[in-house]
Each structure stands twice: as structure tokens, then as C-alpha cells.
Image (tube, rainbow, N blue to C red; front, side, top):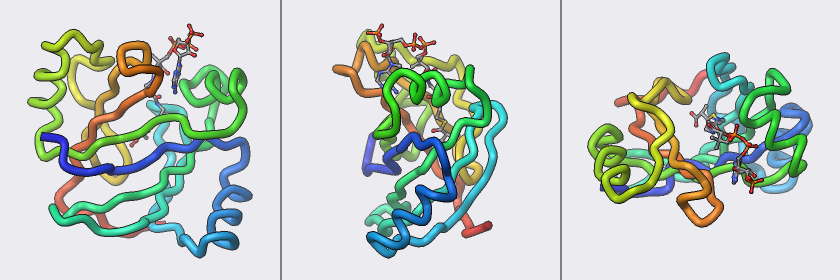
Length: 146
Ligand code: MC0
């Protein structure tokens, strides 16, 4: 069952400048940063609030590490902006299977590693009314880490 918005992924050209915008404009601080080579992104997670299931909601700022990555290609075509939304679930495997059974293309056969040790998969945007949609099961205790 999808129980919360885990994060909104925002593509940007310059992660440090974008982080500074969110800090200076809204007061959001960086909770975690990492490079995910498989996905081709350098990212910063800005924690917005905790949620009733013990998880949290984040803004995920994404800078591509290579032009041929998903975010690199999307930025070249669209410029900066909202790249995807991610729903949180305790069971990414089961929810991906159930959604796939409804005819929505699930992009990975098995969930892959996401931010802060989470397990993630994606649904094709063309099957979701134009929205690239991610499903996330968080690691048990995502610790802040810079
Ligand atoms: C592409 N399209 C999108 C889109 N990306 N539509 C809405 N939102 C997006 N983000 C549309 C294009 O405009 C195009 O439509 C069609 O989908 C095919 O796109 P493409 O440019 O030809 O690119 P493909 O087909 O090679 O790849 C698209 C696809 C890919 C969604 C399959 O981006 C993908 O596998 N994404 C999942 C992985 C990902 O996004 N990783 C980065 C975040 P038209 O009408 O022009 O044909 S990593 C992350 O978020 C991790 C670290 C985490 O959360 O922990």
C-alpha cells in the first residue's frame, strides 16, 4: 500500500546553487547527500517533515553526473524542473507487482538501490499520465549523513 509522498525529484544543472536557493529562500537544510553512479546522479535530500508511518518526506535535488543518464537527457530536453514523484510503501516488491498487473510498465525487474539505502523502482511516465513515478521502501533508519 502506498502510504505517503516519499519525495519529489527536481532536476537541476548545478546542485550546490540549487541547494543554496532552497536554503536561502525557504530555510530547508540538507539532510543527506550522495552520488548514485548507477542512476547517474549527485543528489541532496532536503527533509521537509516526518510522516505518521515513521517515514519522512523530502525534496530530492538531482544533478546529472553524465549526459546520457535519465536526468541528463531529461534536462537537455526540458531544462530544470520537477522530474518525478515518489510514493512510499512498506512493500515495494508487492506494490510494483500489483501495479504491473494492472498494465502499467514497471521499469525494473527487481527494485534497485535508491537514496539512503532505500529500495526503488519506477513506473513508465507514458503509463502514468506523463508523470515519472517512483516507488520507495525506505531503509529502516535513514540517518542524516553529509
Ligand atoms: C522521459 N519522459 C518523461 C520523463 N522522462 N516524461 C515525464 N517525466 C520524465 N521524467 C518521456 C519523454 O519526454 C519521452 O516522451 C518518453 O518519456 C521517452 O523518453 P526518452 O527521453 O526517449 O528517454 P528513455 O525512453 O530513454 O527513458 C525514459 C525513462 C528513463 C522514463 C524510461 O528516464 C528511466 O528509466 N527513468 C527511471 C530512472 C530515473 O529517472 N533515474 C533518475 C532518478 P515523448 O513524448 O517525447 O516520446 S534517480 C533517483 O531518483 C534515485 C537516486 C532515488 O530516488 O533514490
